[in-house]
Amino acid sequence: MNDVVICLVNPAAFDRAAQGLAGCGRRLAEQTGSQLKAIVRSPQSPTVAQDAARVVDEVVVLDQGDYQPETALSALGQVCRQLSPNAVLFGNDTYSQEITPRLAHRLGGSAVGDVVDITVHENALRVTRQVYGGKAQAVIELKRSPAVLWTRSRSFAPAKQLSEPGKHTELSLDLPADTPTRIIERKRELQTEQRLEEARVIVSGGRGIGGPEPFNDELKPLAEILGAQLAASRAACDAGWVPPTFQVGQTGKKVTPDLYLAIAITGASQHMAGISEAKNIAAINTDPDAPIFKHCRFGIVEDYRKVVPLLRQKLIALQNSQR
Amino acid sequence: MNILVCLKQILDPEIPAREFRVDPAKREAERGNANLVTNIFCENALETALQFREASGEAKITVLSFGAASAEDSLRKALAMKADAAALVINDKSSNPDPLTVAQVLATAIRKLGSFDLVMLGREAGDWGAGQTAGLLAEELGLPCVSFVDRIEQMEGGLRMKRQTDSGWEVLETQPPVVVSITNDEHNVPRIPKVRDVMMSYRQPLTQWTLAELGYDTEDSQYYEVIELSIPQTESRCEFVSGDTLDERVESLARRITEVTSAL
Image (cartoon, rainbow over all chains, first blue to last red; front, side, top):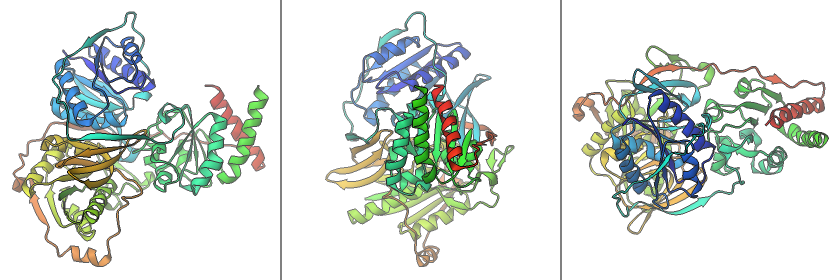
């Protein structure tokens, strides 16, 4: 068996990330002439497995309750050993990122993270990822099997629906009851309904915003007019102006909106690494030589304090005239 | 409490993109005028360890690096920041060892250095950014692993850690020994060592091993291989919105934004 397996870890829904993961997995399965299977670990809704079955050949549901790092890893290790796949693909959520290298080690395979492309080259898998804080890109050949990868799954096209749903399997596992390493508290930061990774429009602020108040008084109302999510650069998060969950970049969220409006963001490569899959980037910045403009579709060289209040009025007027 | 912090020396990631070059044949970045620095997340890890020692009263902090001979500077700086002991495994082989090789070398060195309750690493490095060393090292050592931690406290019968997730944060309880990957937050910004301590650090002992002295089997781990390294040409032409007055320019910005977003 040399199947491709996608892994969803405690998914809330079969969202765009899961669809992209299935799409990526299906293309790889077609290239290697194999089946596509899904391991769904403790879905938060019964529809996740049903939705997965519409695009994969076999769904294995693993009901293990809340996520705990050590027991989740043991369970996925056991299931993967039974399925003996050639490739195991994950999305880019926190849990997937921490599982990937350890799972590869347990399966005698090789891991790579933050993958944006997968190709097959003479029976070996090659993956593409950004390195050096987004300044360069590397093609990496995996030397051991299985390849255990976490991917920017939202940037892959979704999988086509199957004419008949895939089969549903339950596996029996021999699991350790407990471990001394336990998550005892989970806290969600204040966040608007939609996840940043799923947002189609993002208004983002950088160091040049200057403090927490303008985020609240200037950027937030602008985001509301555009139906956008608010985000920030690492500098703005490190300064404590907005919570760390707002951070976009190499060590923050990787986003794929149709429009990313960067306000007072210079555009260091580490920040650009988080928005390389955005369809359109626009910027408001006082410095015409700011690197951000090299990646922009359009922009304005001006102090955001002058632009944003006026922009809000103009956008509202345009929206009213279109009704 | 015995704490080990792993440090990686890297090419300064803050060099501007326009000065950054790669050698496609060697599949490596060119050094150019860039400085060598300690990876920031490794320094966040050391800072977290130092704060843990200050809060708990008693802990010994050993710093360990696997890298070129120049990585001694990263270890000296760590000693100046008041780490207690330092060890360097000099990499006389591949300049870009794969993550499993790194984890195996570190595991061998750690076993040789003694036993540790806490093994701390940065979440990823600013050069290759694979983000795998902590996880692979935990597996090599047969220990549990907690990722993306930004705070560690001692509690009765164990350790309590706070870590960052996509949607917020989590609190975990665990018992040593454990491997921890550290991320940054406002509390673990690395301290600046005093000039005097930097000078003093060069008089402190520093253990050095070659791979052969370490007894590390020098077979390549055959984990993965970088086939190609390139700088992507992604520059697009920015259209700066036009207009004679600010009002006109912002009007045209609003129109462009509306075009892009209403096509959704």
